Amino acid sequence: MTAPAVITVPAAGRAAGRTRRGAELALLILAMLVVLVYSAAVESGIVGEITSDVWVPVLILFVIFLGVHIAVRIFAPYADPVLLPTVALINGIGVAFLRRLDLGAVPPEQRVDLTPFTGMGFRQIQWTAAAAVGAVLLLAFIRDHRVLSRYAYTLGLAGLILVMIPALLPADYSVVNGAKLWILIGGFSIQPGEFAKLFLLSFFAYYLVRKREVLSLASKRFLGIDFPRGRDLGPVLVVWLLSLMILVFEKDLGTSLMYFGMFVVTLYIATERVSWLIIGLLLFFGGAFLAWSLGATVGGPFFAFAQRVDVWLDPFADANDTGYQMVQSLLGLGTGGIFGAGPGNGLPYLADLPRPRYVVPEVHNDFIFAGIGEEVGLFGLTALLVAYLLIIQRGLRIAVTVRDSFGKLLAGGLAFTLGLQVFVIIGGVTGLVPLTGQTTPYLSAGGSSLMANWLLLAMLLRIGDAARRPATPAGGSIPVPPSTKLHEAPTEVVR
Image (cartoon, one colour):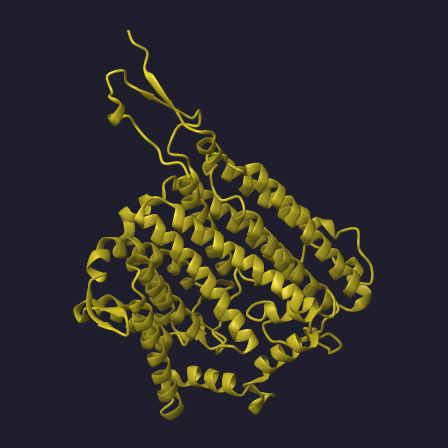
């Protein structure tokens, strides 16, 4: 019997199959060391000394992230090695800053004895553990991201239901800070829209894969740009109207922008037509201008949005009332300057009052970027933004390298959604765009946002595993039956 021929894959092909999990572990340890140094600097600044418990929150976080790392080794061994350590770094910085707020909220003589197992910092660690478990379960149960396409319509319907629930509930069970985004039952609260974006994005990716050829057809060419046919505008107009309904009934600009933006960008990725971006921008700015005009003239459901626009245009016009939050945010960032006041040396609240009052309202949540910026300055915030950009860049890289169209659209949409959320919240805090009410991913206090964004990370890890997984066996050889002719032998393109 003739032995089968063997085609040997070059060394470059074998290198492409390296899992890089060791590099991920090394980066994870480095991220935790950075968090430990920051935590120690915070205690030195606000307590006056580094306590013996400074390492406890960091160790707990490291154990949590190490568990996720082990799960990635088992369930997604070829996943991107940079995503998890970068998310762990941002998450850890957020926990350390919340611990700083806990220390500042007690009298100076009690700070040295404040246990790390209390306050917002420890609560955020608990939410981090729950979010990490959710991410591991997603990796364990969804072994192939293409499975999601089988349930695309179910996920789309579930996403719409999650979006509509707060709008249908009475104000006592859904309104926080003027926005109907929550489900409030007793002491339990959840923001379903954070999870809805993942469901809707899966549906958008599936729908656009099926309709890509139709939506790519051009009707007229104007200024060198091919515009789509009028009858193909239906899906965009439907999502546009949905986003306006969210703006009207839930009074939240950020969520409205999030849904419409991620659909338009996913549509652009699917068709590669710049005209869709132009149409999307025209529809968004047209809808925003209409909402602002109606809110400024007739009030009603658009009044809250019009008020936010007025504060954005001139926050100092009413610095002690409607513009107070924006003014304090700008003053905090201005006080920080280039290098910041130092970790633990800022003034996010007035602790000398009978009851501590935040100088920057919601500094633990929506405005955490301003609170951190006062203490670490422009240099520190730039480093934080680079970490976010690294996550987005690696997500887009996954979208480029994954082999199937559904995975490309889903990974690209996930990366853009995260980037858009970072842009709208940081743009609102710095006065670049009107305030939107979004949370800073992985950084702000809160369970819904943290869990949803860890699920987003797990989906990127799953798609990244498919993108980097070698198409040939790890041994590097492809057996060829003896009867196979040379031109019929399996081949592989090696970059």
